[in-house]
Image: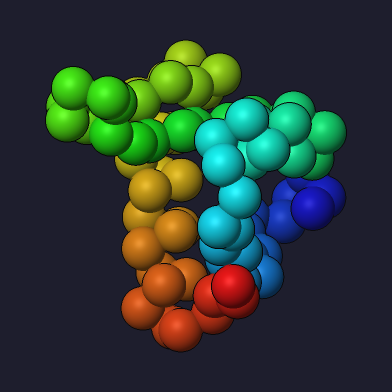
Length: 76
């Protein structure tokens, strides 16, 4: 994306894995610069851990993921 280009290009494709949490975290550490992990802890509470500091940016990632899921772009 150039400085003057204000269009955000998304690939609209999500990948799901059935691997356990340590494997997912290992893959994430190798593939992502910024990360949001949302899940359920052992007590049943929903929790999030993230490298993204701006709440507006976190919401943007959530909306981008929601949009991709609505388009049906996901793989097992």
